[in-house]
Length: 329
View 1 (tube, helix red, strand yellow):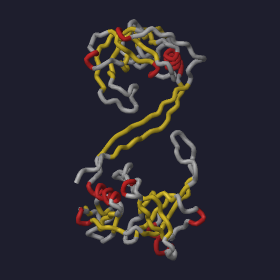
View 2: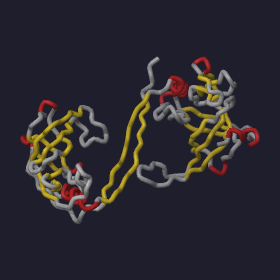
View 3: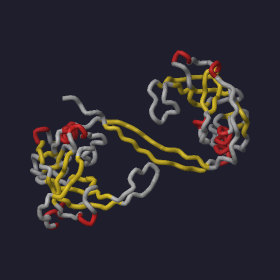
View 4: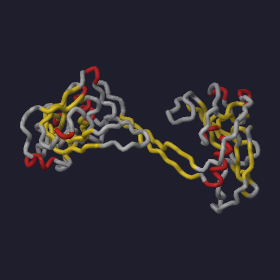
């Protein structure tokens, strides 16, 4: 049995901050085709700083232009860039000591290949045609590949800077969650029955959280596609950066028949909010086998991936709330 691909998590949010007199001047200069550094005693530091890196004491704002030529002091080759890297083809990160500076700046070097890189080589700054008043407005290339550029200055000082902060990481699905995921791809709901309490959990954490006993593959049980709504929320999407939802929808917890733990986070799109209620009997309609996907499955939450096409009423009488109240979140 081949293993399902690892889970990828993306944590991302936009971040806006004021720049101040030093960073603001640095970003304004980058936008306008220049690189600035700070005078700090008898040293010139690039990128510019607001305080002495050795003592932590504030220093006067005294900015000077450096570069655009520089010398590579050290470098590393990025063979497989991520979506957040400044280039989507292989490139180098390097410590570049700009002419006129005493400290190197860490930045990207676009070169034809790793063989074109070497410590001590000369590079020159190049500016992107479309600039965003950010550190990525500039990059470096080997001296022989540099082109003369005219960079038209922008208007005003850069007083705000925006960033999309993100972190991506991966982990393998745990064995019990992989079996649950495979069951979904096969059109089955796979839970686990605790050998200690007899309670059935879906999706299982691999252990009984009440009795604190581990569960194995021998404890797996198949559950029916029918269940009861035990709680729900009508969600009206708030518009924010990256929001894809525009219309209100329902997110419900559904207690599958034979389970002791509701299946949470189920999107309900086909039933009108005025017709939806706790106690409603529903049935999961699975997508065709070719359309099923467990993308987005993880080891923590109760997702059903992209497997259930919709939940529809069975037409059975509602279950009295008193019978399901202990399962309501």
